[in-house]
Image (cartoon, rainbow, N blue to C red; front, top):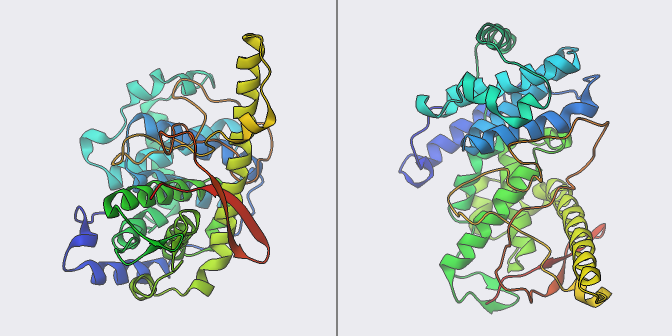
Length: 351
């Protein structure tokens, strides 16, 4: 989508946001009826891995997965062809969202380990044929807003100097904004992992990512008036989506804690010592990429050199994130609540 860089900071931000909101009303319907729906998670991960390797923008990655979802919803595609469809969606999305020099090259794609591990050799003719089929399917219209197109607008005032953290004033506004951006990115990538999030409007999903981030960070009020005015969504509008995001977050926390406990047990056993349960449970449970301005699907445990073969349906987001959210290891766990149905413990940042 040809939008001006950092449009959310310009004088036309409100007009552009409203134009995107109008466009999302005309998005194609998604029925979730693909016979290959159990393979969807694997190929969404493949797009994320390749996108991360080429450092493509989040808008390109989210558009690629959205194109894949819509195409799978309309066609019965063989498993072998799904890989070509997925990469063609990524190429089309990157041509639409990125600069020309950022678009992945055929030679580089074929050299990736995750491509060669599938015994797949991409050809120029094959990719062009698939891209043409995709364009005809979508009637040559790739102007399809995703949550990634709305997230920066929501983040522009996601943290305010009047916010409270656990009832105390914020001591460092810039640090708080950094944490907010990291968590919002995390929740945005979580939304790619399950097709259930396609039932929410992209603008609502972006707002829910910010709301879920404020909950995890123990900021109050959870959904301040300025965010409600900016997005046009009330807290009641966001609860169903935010709850699903936080349930996925809860799953990630449990999985990360489980893996850390196993690693600690291996370390202690190898050194002739025994790790206690308390030692395992007091490890930091969430992690994020170190670079603040590089958005990527880094919560994936896959590397750019390998990707495990699809193995049936996978629900939710159970992959762990790859770097530490806070360099300190003494983060405390505190509970937050979305509704009567969900409670989860999550680490806070230091005041």
